[in-house]
Image (cartoon, rainbow, N blue to C red; front, side):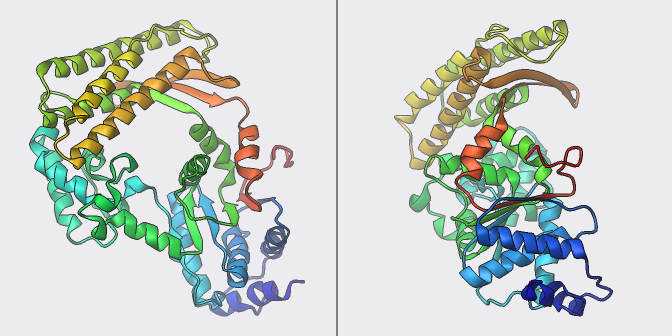
Length: 429
């Protein structure tokens, strides 16, 4: 029996001394032993741990012991916010109070995506052009709330912010990689994202969600990263991995997404383009593109009603005239960028160019079925009074991609959840 784990999990161990009514659980101890062994041998491990096993302690303790011994960084990735909060607010503080963390250098950080943080430069610019960007009192009220909050918040994180009336205002003021000025920014010393990033690099245990983990994985293929380098990964709620991986490896284009981009550019004499003092012809072109997008999705909806399946098996199943229009919008913006009045204006224009071209490319890929070994389909759902119509593309075999991009380069990976087996077998893995 592992002596150190016995000192922690045993009937008279460190947890028992701190936790009145604690009962020794054989499954929890065995799970911790197997995880410790997998880490030492750099082997992948799959563990199904039902309710009552205490799986979070079973993987946190071996991870903490590994950090104590090696000072290496490790990642715990979850699917839900609720589990992240449990780990950060309850489980890890308890293990600290139980004196299981022997190293003074142990630090934990909750990693969040860039768009979760307020950008002070974008807030100032949005405030300057609020008359051109927003339409109603709720949006102006949200902006006023953000300005007040920006003066008192320490983290600048969306999770700290009182509820906003609309996500539109946050989209105009949050951090985005495409329009970050970096060291040239006047607000860099107060940058909330830069501060959070610094704290992340000081930590050796990161709590992340699956979506952020796979975003980081995709960036690493381009020699970039969101997370610092790490040695060990634990996926809790691992039953959701395939779904999240499919979303990150695939493409998703909806009528709502196209409308959101076009409305951000121009809608009812408001929007980003009005800040650039462009002529009416450009605004008319946006309106015409909006109409073309509506026709396109009406044709997709009509196709769905005629077909028995949602799967699209042939290219060009409907006529598509939206992507060339988005490319034309990008060209208009690129021309205007050449006479940008400031670096701030230049990066904002660049951001919209990239968004327009990316959306155009994704529409073409799905309609032309450009990617081999991918499956294509459409779905319709109700969101308020308007139907949401979405085009999808995803790899037929997600496992092959995960093998090459995740399981080969990273060892060890621990996967755990309450339900992982199929017919009492781990053959799926």
